[in-house]
Length: 305
Image 1 (cartoon, rainbow, N blue to C red):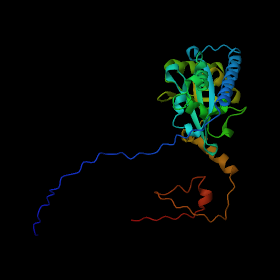
Image 2 (spheres, rainbow, N blue to C red; image 1 turned 90 degrees about the vertical axis):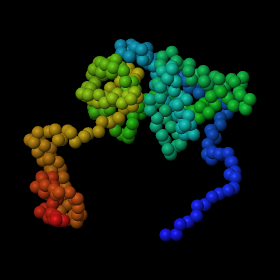
Image 3 (cartoon, one colour; image 1 turned 30 degrees about the horizontal axis):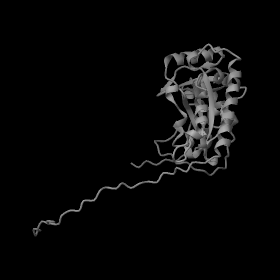
Image 4 (cartoon, rainbow, N blue to C red; image 1 turned 180 degrees about the vertical axis):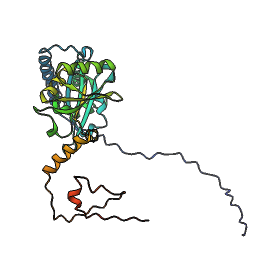
């Protein structure tokens, strides 16, 4: 192979400063008529605190004495999705509990817990927004991005906590649900269990722990959920509990047969069905009571060996 000569570059290099490629950020937040919008939100908050105060005087809560407060739901324009943390202030124990995206309406529902004594937090932000002396040299209002994007403020209702289809919310009949509480403190866990027992709510065995979340299985109806929300200021989310196969695999053979017989009695088989199923496995038990009616001794197999 012929040897090639080395390449030498004798030219002096040019020094060019690095310039990062900028990505434009959309900061076009919805603009509002300041006085009208700000005063509307002030009136909303004042009415919320009046209503919340009425509810608090109905019953004295023996649990979570250091955690009392009010759940509020903010309806937010979707353009605030990168600034939604502005609704939270951990120093004041004001927490965002859950966020729901309403894609079709370009809105978000943000559930926030506000402790007792911090009712003036958002009122203060709105009053600064309304104050002409707080306007910057660029003509920006204090807290303008946040306040302009707030479409509505409401006292939270059951649906504010519910994750999943609204039709799954229990009615008068009890169902197993998951209650997600937002703190990971052992005292709060004990208080929650005591509160549930005082409301005649059955709590399942075991607790699932996540960072800043504990998940309980509870057996309750619609009224008991409302009572739990009213008296338990640590609830972040409520979901319908999914049924796992553990229920069936844990049954004794006799009980499994009873479940199979019950299902068979309610099945309507189409004997003229021409559907075929390919099972990529070591086979199936064609003698199983639920499989036998559809196999009808018409099983074929192939062994590659």
